[in-house]
Length: 62
Image (tube, rainbow, N blue to C red; front, top):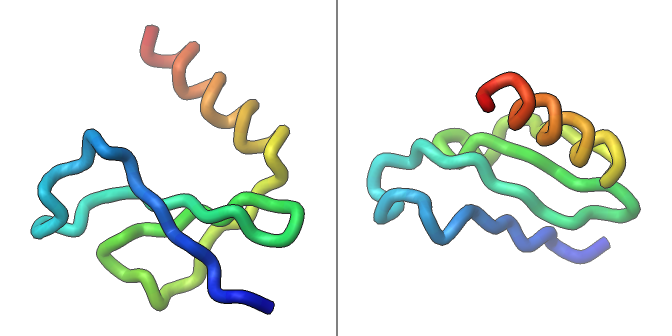
């Protein structure tokens, strides 16, 4: 299994504060982790579940 490539938004801070959410394409799922603790466990969601989660967040705050 290859090492995942974790990415964060280009709108994140300069990277020194470490307060970012990172995502990675894993085998059939999307990984989500806290950049402050990259060695900690991460969430895994299907692409559809991630889409639903993000839509609920948008609906909640708009």
